[in-house]
Structure formats: structure tokens, C-alpha cells
Length: 140
Image (tube, rainbow, N blue to C red; front, side):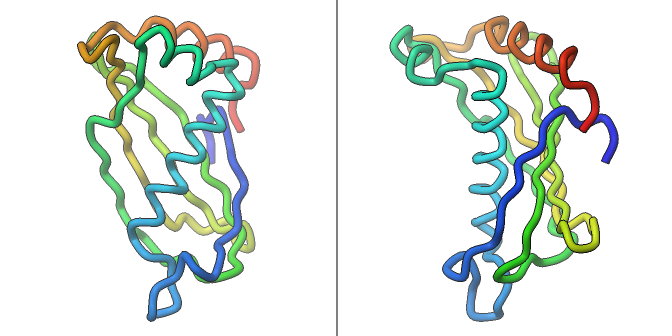
């Protein structure tokens, strides 16, 4: 778990599981999104304020590799780092580890673009906030 700059701890709730007793695949996107939002809050990024300025981060692509399944009651951490790709894209690399044994459960890659009034813009406002956080926190 090196080179990650933020972690969010969560626990699987019963209603997130399917008839097989494992977390439904679609729920993992919720976990990843919640962790990104917690990271943004930690950097001081205010979604509501940015939205009022017409600035919105939007998911462009999601890739998830399901290694093993989480089950009801499992505690886990979702860790992330980020990188810039080209001029317009920010990539969040996010992994989920089960806390009881530090087993890698899921690997995710989420590509985000920033829109202003519906048109793509450079993600400078986010990059500045992320760099400050990365320099303060270091590896998780």
C-alpha cells in the first residue's frame, strides 16, 4: 500500500450484498466515489462553491478489476493516488483492501475531466489543491 496519499475506511452493509452474500459489483463504484469525495474535502475543495462557478468534475471512464469479494460486515479501506494525463484528464488510482488481512479486493482506475459551463477546461484548480495535499501527507 505504498504511494497512496489518502485513505477512507468503510464497512460493508447488509443491503449492499446480493443473493450470493457478496457485495454487488455496482456498489464498488459507490465506495470509490465516496473515497474520492472524502479526498476532495480533505484538500479543501468545495463542490458546491465550484458548481456555483459552473465548474464540475465528471467521470469520463471507470475500470474496475474485482480480485475478491467483500462480504457483509467486512471493514475495508479505499486508498487512492492521482496523476494527470494529458492536459484535461485526472486519473484516480484506487484500491480496496480488506482490513482483517490487508488483502487486495479491488483495483480501480477512474478518469475524470473538469467542465466549466459544460465545456472541458484545464484541471488547474484541482491540481493545485491535490499537490498541496500530496506534499503535506506523503504516502499512506
